[in-house]
Image (tube, rainbow, N blue to C red; front, side):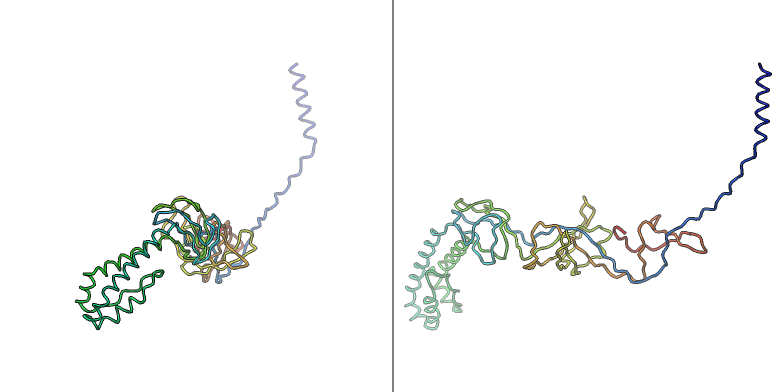
Length: 333
């Protein structure tokens, strides 16, 4: 059995030796292609593009300083209601203090009328001044300014008759009466209303919250590495998220602290709305900061840079790495 197996093996070796040896293929030389660009230095205008949220530059809480029932003002006290500068926003019941004020002015007039004869005979030089002051007093109008008295004797005489005390007491009551009327100091809108008409307000009660709609600013978070390219009063192009509308803006201020959660610095851009392109508080917009022009620079794709500051250059038909000075990293480049 062993002899038969050995014979078969020898026959196989013999027949294999009769076959032609396979021809060996030559190894083709592989040429790798790389994308290159000519080194050309020029002035590069670098822009920073970030998204931000629009907000009002003025948020004001309308707080009552007096007590009384809230009455209808010049406009409805409702959330979302717009108003103009000078509109009566809130009126708090004021009839009682108004009547008390008129009564105090009547007593004050009576007190001055009683001392006019003394002035006519004892202080003849000051009589025309005091008489004119008496004539200028109107029950339904604020008290006129107290006339300037240079004579020490006249001041003592007025103080002894409680004229000065009554005058300043009435002026104080007038101030309290004015606190029953709250007027708008700017064009704006109600963003929240805490007390409706008919509610009782107390000193310190929050009645509503208002914002200015004529002064808006865009808060834009900018990476710390880019903040050095942004300066106050710098011009900014502001566009809507869909790119259909555009406004002009100006850097109003730059925060001097970093938000620890985002590691960014807030930049506030003043934006002015127009009649045909209104802006709304809370709206998201895109800000384009036109950075400084970089002299003698070249912009390359970020993927071409490795080890943070090295690139490949072609020299004598071969690649070699070289170190570059990275001035600015542009997003998505």
